[in-house]
Image: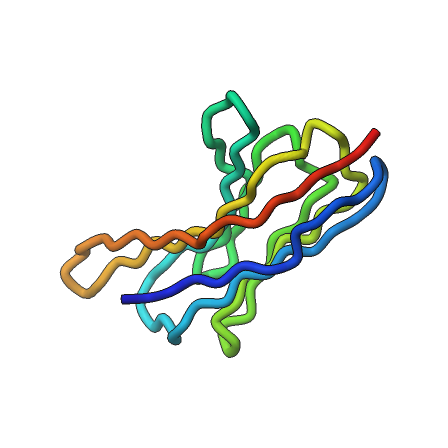
Length: 120
């Protein structure tokens, strides 16, 4: 069972920056994807950014050019650098991990969530 621990959320003014981190409890050697979802009050959870074990990244349109996802496989950690933050970025951000084993069996893991609040 892989555990994901997030850090880096907080309160920031519009235009500011935050960096989220998510550390996995163990090294993942098989094909995987790590990323971030967010959920604002009264809204559905949405995918913000994801990065594969081959370092291929994708983003939701609303954060392109402002957010950057990266990973350090040696430290089992994924990062989300968030710049030019807007009040609409306010949400609970959840780290996730999808792992496929040699039989293509998929396992999904989630972090506990970290609050990001952007004031106007």
